Amino acid sequence: MLRKLVSQAKISSAECGYRKGNEIFGQAEPADYIYQVIEGAVRSHKLLSDGRRQIGAFHLARDIFGLKNGDFHRFTAEAIIDTTACVVKRQSLERVARADPAMVRSLLTMTTDNLQQVEKHILLLGRKTSQERVAAFLLEMHGRLAAADVMALPMSRRDIADYLGLTLETVSRMLSEFHRKGYLKFLGTHRQIVVLKPAGLAEIDS
Amino acid sequence: MLRKLVSQAKISSAECGYRKGNEIFGQAEPADYIYQVIEGAVRSHKLLSDGRRQIGAFHLARDIFGLKNGDFHRFTAEAIIDTTACVVKRQSLERVARADPAMVRSLLTMTTDNLQQVEKHILLLGRKTSQERVAAFLLEMHGRLAAADVMALPMSRRDIADYLGLTLETVSRMLSEFHRKGYLKFLGTHRQIVVLKPAGLAEIDS
DNA sequence: CGATGACTTGAACGCCATCAATCGCTGTGG
DNA sequence: CCACAGCGATTGATGGCGTTCAAGTCATCG
Figure 1 (cartoon, each protein chain N blue to C red):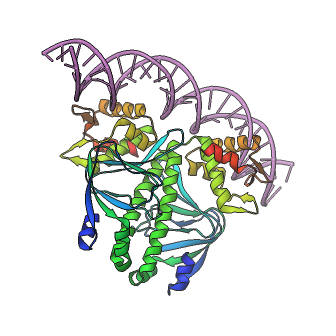
Figure 2 (spheres, helix red, strand yellow):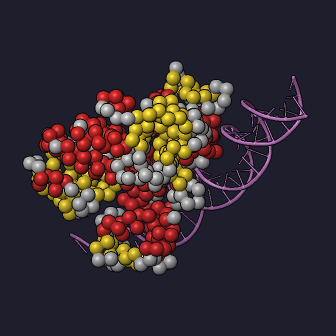
Figure 3 (cartoon, rainbow over the protein chains, first blue to last red):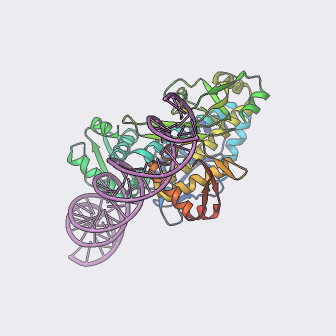
């Protein structure tokens, strides 16, 4: 969507590459740019002073992130794997937005979609069991990156845990349990997962 | 803000009263109206099939809610106590928004503020201890409804628990603990709380 | 090969939930 | 005015889910 917007209006954009593990922007830094993932994967997280981490979202191909209204970012964004992103200066976007109501409306739509994701996640974090959380995660990723039926997860177990408000051990145990139940199977490295019974997972997720 | 917008533009609005415990709108109902609390308090929640409840937000005087982009609400909203609200038809707002870019930008600002609240809550639900959650809640409410230093909480312990992802017993225990430590005191009914040491709570919240 | 890092698996602990009893306030009727 | 029911809140005892701690396994890479 961002690229479409960018191509429509005269906004200067650039492709930018980030190496695995590198920071794209930091929490409380000025929010000067808006990003769209072209290839790769990004995690947005917040930290508590003692190191506890909460990942707010994973950004995969075509996802837009860094879209904030305040002047500062509320998350730290890092490339999970080598990533290329389309980068747009906020000011450019805002300049166009002043003239183009459709642009503002697009921004509103994107922000609202974002809000919807996050509100769904609040229910998961506040009230779901570890089983339900991992099942929900698998279904989410199944929908978002199931290329030819097999999910190649870019993120580690710890990333998943910090996204779901669990520990990596608990995530691992749940995955093993689903494996035992025949709901999924692994391919080589344990980051390649094939979901065999989405219905089973959906039932668990309630 | 909504009233200001309403008064500026020619939008038909109405004041509407809701009795304690009554539903204002239901999850997945068409989102026809947008609301602003004039007096009272509202809770927005989601339910799981087995009755587990997660409250996404409390709406107090001057707060705007029901602001969705999709056609359907993602929460159920109920009056916690007798409440009067300013009600605006979504269509009217959208009609004006088509002509008035400033209006769209205001909507975007409100949505983004909303997003910021929710993102903060995700960290709380995913990674904070029960102590930290209750301390954070007290500080939040202290800031939002401390009229003359004493907080008159409209919501029950269960509401607080469902907002914080805890049980009402745990909330009660934490409040008692803070009372013992001298961080707060109760007035008559246990819904009137005076925060004596915000700094103590802030330290706990980390 | 040995080292390193990611993941799995097992055992024990602890925080919070669950279950249950009691307190205290409010309103209602005798 | 008091008895009592009813609800919300507190408090205590117990239990369980997920965490923590600790090996052990597996894949990758020097």
